[in-house]
Length: 286
Image 1 (cartoon, rainbow, N blue to C red):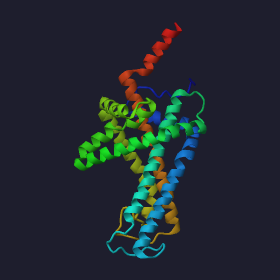
Image 2 (image 1 turned 30 degrees about the horizontal axis):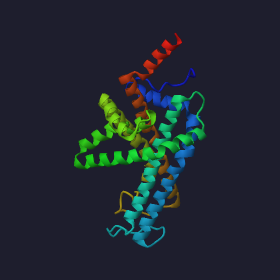
Image 3 (image 1 turned 180 degrees about the vertical axis):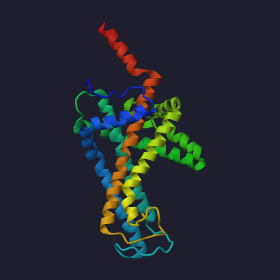
């Protein structure tokens, strides 16, 4: 192992998980940045472009003018649902690629000494993409049901299922095994994981607000969330909106890393996997 290589499988407290996450990003900035550029950025930009097309199509349908925005008559466009589902499809694909890329990189980092290459990442991402998509879909449905029934069950499920994908990738577990294993790990340090998730969400929305603030200063409110108030949107605002959407997607990288490091921390605290490996290695050397 390289002297400066960060050990992923280590028991860490709340603050150490944050420190290790940002230290890892700093250490792996170049190879990790290359992976982000190749696998994540295209999907994030595509989502931003899709958002502009979605907004333009909605307002064109309501006003009959392209691309000037008129006054809402309080009626949803006929193709709103179709366009919204298309936008959400791109959103889900972008989220899937972010999670797949980050956890694939961490998985390769566990077993490699040399720098991770794009060709290795391509094979890892290709292998993990569909399982991650399936796990995300199931998690989303269960959490949504929990939120609809009552807020607390939804929050409970969101935390309990946070290690579903890390277990699948890092421990090479099957779908059902990873599902139950996620609950076991989350329950070991449920409140710490909840606090970690809450802090990362607050951080995400704070940074996202900074990114989106120029649009607010321009007096622009996204039609995606406000169908009753429309204003004229310039080309510059449309371009910035697409870029801001892409940057917002990239911010999900940080919470994804934090959950990954929390998984390693809980596993090591609960099972002392790394310690047992070192003891066995000493016994073999002797």
